Image (cartoon, rainbow, N blue to C red; front, top):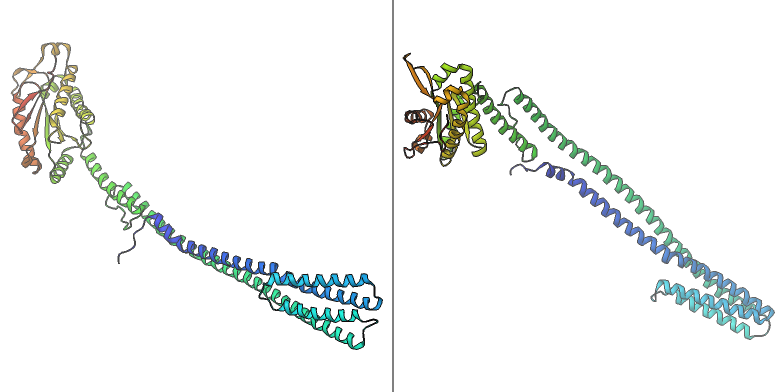
Length: 448
């Protein structure tokens, strides 16, 4: 199984996923514990406390009822009997509340109700007899009252135990929830710290390698590009660094090989570009540009003026390619007055036409008014004999044959040299192509 490949965001998410799971687990446990605590507390408040209070009130009602009953037996005051009956109703109402809280299935309240009914019946019998009750009747009344009180107090004690147990349970649940929260919190902190340490070491390690590689590239050691076998943004950055180092190396080579006069790529860079495009196999036009009558011009006007002519042609080529060409078009300076234009085979003619048009438009400015009016200059030929020479013009030889442009630079150069001789044999600025053997001048002839 291959190594998991994640982006930095994915790694961060994966690193903190255990923490998120722990947080979710802790939150779920806390919510469940709170729900249980709420349930127990609700049971205490809504059931246990009211039942304990009701049991205590039943004891109070029974004792009060017994007190008023015995006083009635002594005094025979009807008001005391009425209070006795009221306490009896309060006792039965208290039993009703117990049944309402516990439900109809409760057996304790009916049993107490039956005992209380027997207790009242004994008082009714005593009320019906004149005078004080006999000792036997008093003993029976006390026994029945004691039975009821014992049952009430036993039930109240049992209810208190249940309430206390529930209270202890809530305390235990709170303690357990606190302990679990602390444990999960500490575990989450440990996992978060571990994840942060691992991720930070991974990221900072990659950044250190990128920093070191940047320093190496800045020193000109372009083969020291960083290698990060990751699919995250740092890996993309490392691959971009590698591509940049290759391009910088090529640019440095081109700069070292560039012409000091025009700053255009020189011979080695041109050959490398030709080889690269030949390997790509795309339709290509290799255009060789050469100035006509340049030696005669330099002999008369001097080296500095000749250099200005060469720089003007270089700028013209650059401007035409920038404005009319494509980003992949290439301009190079072989040396002297020889230049190269590499472009697509279907675009070289309009580019060459525009170069000729602009250069021919600039030529008259290189001459004196007298020479510009005559259209020729006086000089000597290569044998030293007096001769007249036309004004500067431009010869372009365009090689487009796939079998040539996709071969080595030597064959391309030889084919371009043959076409250039044909171009130089024509008057004015012309371009000769091997595509159809055509020779054509610029759309607008030069002036002067």
